[in-house]
Length: 78
Image (cartoon, rainbow, N blue to C red; front, side, top):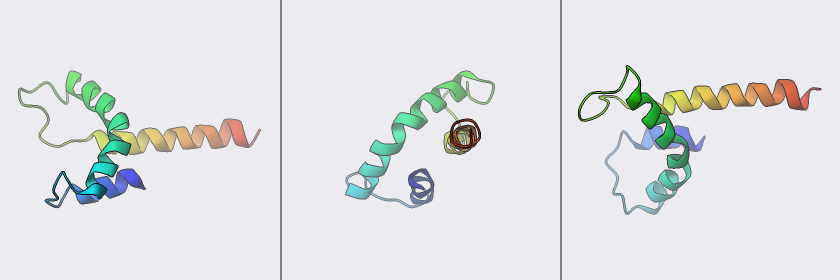
């Protein structure tokens, strides 16, 4: 939910000094930075100046969903 809120708020021009924006970045950057690094090193990144569209939140959503399914299937049900 926090990641989704960050994506939605990224569509608006909000000041970096806004406490909500700072909190969302502090909570989501530890997940998104490594993903951005990997995407930049892949065929989808690699341009000078970086990616045109940041797909790291999408990859993070997919990763978190996979982890949730794994935890539910292998750790909780058994």
